[in-house]
Each structure stands twice: as C-alpha cells, then as structure tokens.
Image 1 (cartoon, rainbow over the protein chains, first blue to last red):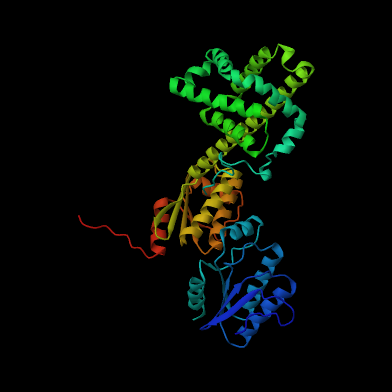
Image 2: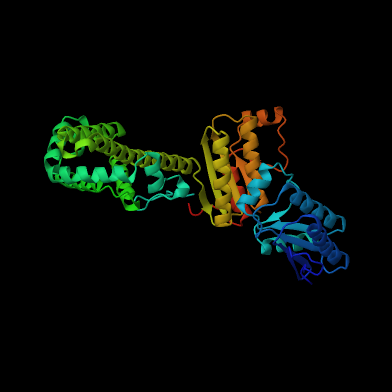
Length: 128
Length: 311
C-alpha cells in the first residue's frame, strides 16, 4: 500500500498501511483541498479494490483540526460508510478533543478508540 | 497541571516579561551620566558616615509596628544592617547595570517574601532620604552643584523604588496565581478507581471557569493514564441548570472522542426532570442514578468482577 507521496507536488499528509483487512491511516498533515481529496481517493480506492473492510484513522500526531478539516474528515467517514467500510478514529489528543467540542462539532456518531491497536480491534469486531 | 513561576529571584526578569533594561530605566527617570557622577561625589562624603546614618534610621524603624515582628532577633538586626550598608554603598557607587538592578530586584523579593508592606518600605526610603538631606544641609560639599546633586540622588532613589515596587507587585501576583492554581487543582480531584477507571466527584457550584478546568483536567488525565472509563459524579453539584448540563455533556463528548467511555452518575430525579423539561439534547450520554451503579458498570467494562468473599 503506497503512502500518499508527493507525486504531483503535494506534500505527504498521511501514512496509510494495511494490517490484515484493516487500513491504518496515520494523519500527519493538514486536510485542506487537494490533500483531503487525495486522502479520500486513497482510502476509498483501497476499499473499492477489496483490500480492506475497515479503516482506523489515527489522529495522534494532530494538534488541531479546523472546522473545514473536521467536516472533510466526517465526510470521508460517511463515504467509507457508503462503501460498507467501518471506520474508527484513534488517539485524539486532549487539546484536539476539547477544541472540537468547543467548536460545537457533531461527534455523537463517531466511533473512537484510545490507540491504533484498540481501533483495529474495534474495526475487526465490527466487520466480522 | 503544575506550573512553575515564570521568573526566579536569582535572575533578572527578561524583557519579554515587561522588565525594563538599565538604560531604559535611566531614560525613564531622566537620569544622566552627570547625575550619576554627582551621586558618586555625594557618596564620597556620605559613605564613610553610613554607620551613623543607619543608627539614625533605626531610631525611626524601632517605632514602626512591623519592627518587632521582623527584628525580634538581634543577630538578624545586625545582618540586615550590614545588608543596608551594602545597599547604600552600591547606591552611591551609582553604576546602574544588570547586577545593580538584580540587587534591587532581590530587595523587593525579600520584602515580598517576609510580607513587609510597600507602605513601610516607601516610608523608610523617605526617612533615609531625609537623613541624607540633613547631612547635606551644609552646601559647601559641592558648592553650586549642590541642588542638582540632591536632585540626582532623589531621582536615583526613585528608580530604586520603582524596581522594588515592580518586583514586589510581581511577587504578589505570582503568589495569588499559585493560590488560584492550587484551588483549581483541589476543585478537580480526579482519582483512579482501577487501572483504567477514573472518578471525578464534583461538589459545589459549576460555573464556566470551573467547567473549563474540569474539561482540562479530565482530558489530560484520560490521556495520561489511558483511561477506558471515566465516571463523573454530580450528586454534590448544587444546581444543575441548562448551562451546567451543557458543560457536563461537553466533557462527556470530549472524553468519548478520546476513546474513553464517560458515565455521569448521581443524577437526582429533579435533575432528570430539569434536563428533559429544558429539552437538553442528551443523545449518546450515558447516565446512572447512583455512583455505585456507575462504579459497578465501570468495573464490568474493564473486566473486573466484584464479588463478596467469606462470611
């Protein structure tokens, strides 16, 4: 599984790897515009090709997501859901969690985990 | 949530803290190199007599109500007197650099530490000034330059006072900040019930500041111990209105975002009625009537079985 490289001039903003039937996407950069599109393409493509059934998006390297980035992330999760994949967010930092809640972000329908490992267990439990 | 003070008495506060540099202080007090030279000339006459002046100063000081409190020990009096001789020697040396300011800075710190009031300090500076001025009443020492010399000495003394008052104020603010932080930490006593279960009993009034403190300490503890379950007991909260309910719901949501389950316990029937009648959105909120129920659920969630042993 390739990471999102800078093939067309974009800096890598996520490292995506596959463990069994779960994709682990470690977000390391921003999720604006083309970055978001690339991120979605990679994940949706992998699900479409049948390489995975679930996705763990690891946010442990992210200090802050603005409203637009978070909306993009939510949209990504919904798209994955449309393709029948389950997704889990993992490793949110206290400051990020507090900022998202303070900005009034809709979070009740999100599945979250403390770590990538726990996220993978959750995903596997829900896909089998 | 322990924060250390930004500055330390052994170092000068940095310019970033708003502390002025020697040159800017001199400019602010309109002290010229000529003024400093005049102060040095006065010093040549006054410094040899410092012992006598300090004696006069203590005649005044002994009448002050704070004297007994701070100078009950004669060794201490002597130590302070030696320090005062050093202080005035430095003053009449009139070399205003970082180390000069640092010494004044430490004087202010010392006063703040022992709780000597600024009022007494200002009065004592004035007394010292009077003692020097009396001695200088004989204008022969400097001739025509005499009035300017007295003025220069006064300006420099005011600069000293400004530094001492500045540090004194900072020390007081720092003290108050530390007290506020201690109070905050006491107001959010997060306790570990088991490896992955945390409990926070909330007692008293919840306002927006406290809600913010609760949010911060809950989330940082969740991250710190990688908690799987967080129980917030609100049976001791005085009033649960829309605002308080919303604060608590936010904390619960943020906790869940970090992958940790959050249970609110201790909801009284009155609180349940209020929350529903006010139409507060409680979807996704896990609640229990009693702390006991919440703890049992918490143990179950992390796989700990509670059972009675023996008799």
